[in-house]
Image (cartoon, rainbow, N blue to C red; front, top):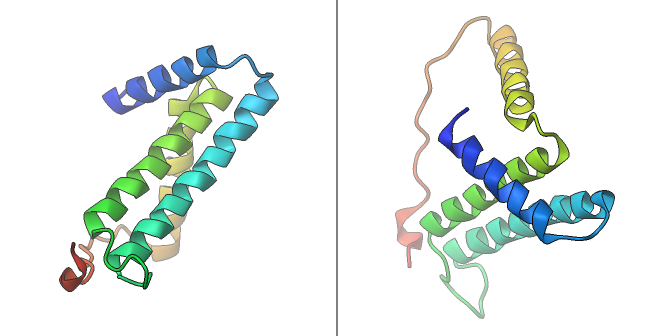
Length: 123
């Protein structure tokens, strides 16, 4: 198991031990937390592009990356709280995605780097 999954499982355990709500409610709140974090990605992207007239360029693209990481971690914690075998569940899912992708393309394609967001949008 990777260090990342060890950290995720530790966070999930701490959250489980912190709450006295029924399991179904704990899971629902964790799933809602994913949506909350996704909203923070949107807020950061809007801020990085300076599209809120009241706030201007309130975020950087580095802030957007950090918020995306929060979404990923929150999703991993949700999976771990739902299934104690989360690392294996996730690995099988990624394998299915990779197989499907390779089947559509006929063969593996080298990873391409994507252009960075506009640099004039930094804070």
